[in-house]
Image 1 (cartoon, one colour):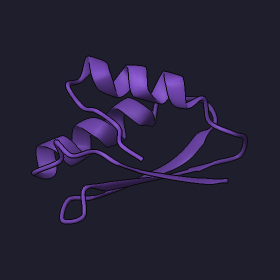
Image 2 (cartoon, rainbow, N blue to C red):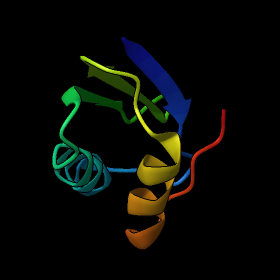
Image 3 (cartoon, rainbow, N blue to C red):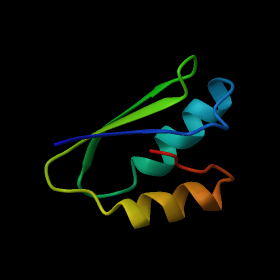
Image 4 (cartoon, helix red, strand yellow):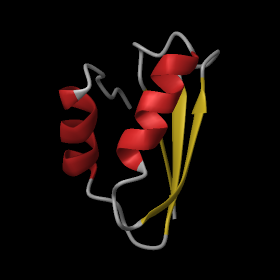
Length: 67
């Protein structure tokens, strides 16, 4: 499954690596791609992802998700 969302706070490689490292800890997530220019995050997973968990993990790092 593929899930996409926007994170307005993405501005640099540090943001990118923080998001990738944070979301890579979630069991069902197989791939995390972050596009700095478009501020988009793409997740590939074997199962449906719990977006509340993703929002919570990113919120702890200072990032918000917008659809």
